[in-house]
Structures are given as C-alpha cells and as structure tokens.
Image (tube, rainbow, N blue to C red; front, side):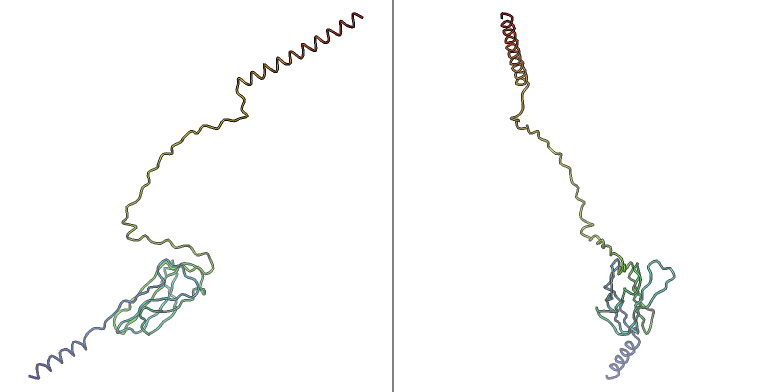
Length: 201
C-alpha cells in the first residue's frame, strides 16, 4: 500500500526537479517613447523571475547604425514596479536617443526592452509633445459645420439737423440775390439823387 504513494511522490519530485524556470518579461514603465528628458531621470519598471542573473541599462544614439551602447547602470536585484536605474542626462549632448534594458538569466537567452525616440533637452528648448489620439477620438465621427449665411439689414441713418435740402439751398440763394439787388438799387438811387442835387446848385 505504501509503494504506490512512494512512486507517486518520487514522480512528482522528478517533475519538479526537471521543470524549467519561470521567466517574466521585463517591463519599462518610464520613460516612454517620445518623452522629453532633463537632468536626472529615474528609469522605472519591473525585472523579476526565478532565474534572473543580472541586468544592465544602456543608451545609444537614435540615428547610430553601429549598434554601440553606453552603459548607464547594472544590477542583480529584482525590481517590482520600482526604480531600475537613474540616468544623468546632463552629462551628454542634447539629441534623440534609445534606451535599452537587458536582462540575463542563468539559463536561456536574455530579454531586451528598447525605448525609442527619447528626446534629451537640457540645453535647448523642449518641444511640446503631441498626444496620441485615443480610441474614442478615432472612433468618433467627424463633426462638420454648415456655414450660416449672414443676414444684412439696412438701418436708415438718423436725419442730420445741419443738413440743407436742395429747396432750402435755392431759396437761400434767391433771397441773398434779392437782398443784394435791393441794396445795389438803393445805392444807385442815392448816388443819382446826390448828382442831381449837385447839378441844381
């Protein structure tokens, strides 16, 4: 009766002893692609698994095709949603870079996470990042606006009290001419009377 239990126990031990280690894909939560970095930057994420040996964090120029990476930090301790390394970006020139986190295991191939398009702006103006559209914004129908024609109304101007009508203008001219004629006639009569008086003497 005991032998079957011993056989099962030995079989379980053999399975567990030969089981492959559990690997967990490393994750970088910050910085994200397109971020603008200044000063000392915390590289945050998760590095965990049963067989983690060590990891390293490095950077490279975005347009460098030689695959040359420069070490930022390395470690052996597992990190769960914390700070993996700190990066002093003030020690390098402004530009666009790539960030790599590489995890090595005691068995198997390493895991690599690369964050592209990191813009370091310590000595030059930082551009504003254009947010990516959300799924709701992409699914929403485009709103079209229909132009409303402007209605123009003619408002009559108020009558100018200083305005002179054509009739009044003509009347004023005739009145002035009549007065001038009367004055000239009186002046002429007076001159004629004086001339006669002088002649009578």
